[in-house]
Image 1 (cartoon, rainbow, N blue to C red):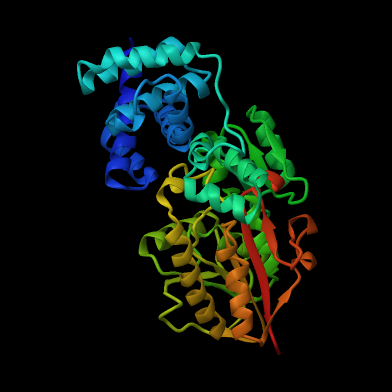
Image 2 (cartoon, helix red, strand yellow):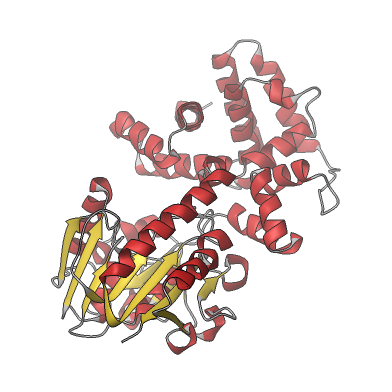
Length: 445
């Protein structure tokens, strides 16, 4: 067995183990271990490890369900380090066409022996039985919620909530969307580039793509990493951004020579899109309360050659800012609309956090509304599909702020993305983009 193959799986196992045991973000642990490994692993290895780790974490519930089809006894009684290893093997068998079954089994068995000499035989038997298993009892809406949630690879509380808030079918569709490898979209910087030039670049480099049918500056492509490392990315001609984020900017409708405040701006995707639509005219003031995220905001602005934006570290719930005619408020949220892109977020959330987010969002919105001029506009947005973070926040706000009214989003974005109450609401299985919510609030003159 190739030492490199063993090493990549060992690193993947270590990332998952460290993330699980220390309750740390998967992306942070991955970056830390990649830095430690340095040049020992190449770019191809890093891509493989990242795909393997993210896929295994994303589908860990489903993989446990698969493994329990062939495991005799209580699967939960196995040590977590071995369960992680078995998931890695099962993921390669079921979801990585590039890995032959024999390689998935052999590498997993070799690693199992390193954990404990007695584990090789058990690992070998389980994975080989899994390969040959033909009949499976697929859960449906009559299956106990615990088993259904495991099969759908989401926490039981969340599947239960989605079924109650939406329907069984919508909960299933959303979970299945989150279980797919995420789609990545690029936005062209129309100040620096054109859609035609980007299409020609993609064709020249044999990169397949799809241009969004309604939001023409957004492209879904293959070979994401190749584009992120390209000259056109480095020169600020393209950015990674989902069309759902673009809709929020269109709802604010920035115009040339306007003065706009972006109060929760990092990492700068929406800020930079506003600046591009304004053709670098007027003035944007972009704030964030996190120093770490503030650095990312400045990096985005610098890479995209934006000159009309000033940045600062400000917490709008504690600090005063200048009065604004237009203010974008992209608040912290549970992220249930982008769970496909952050493999571990579903396992890191709990029901209490939805309420905590609701209270934080109210605090931020109430504070921000104090800095809107008469006749001014505030756009509130989340990347959540939970009503507690969306309309429930807005309904409470409107009751206590009768001088604000909802302006129908249909006047600013395609009505395909607008709900019956005039807000943007994107549902990933329907719209094929990130999930999210945004509402335009206008203050009486």
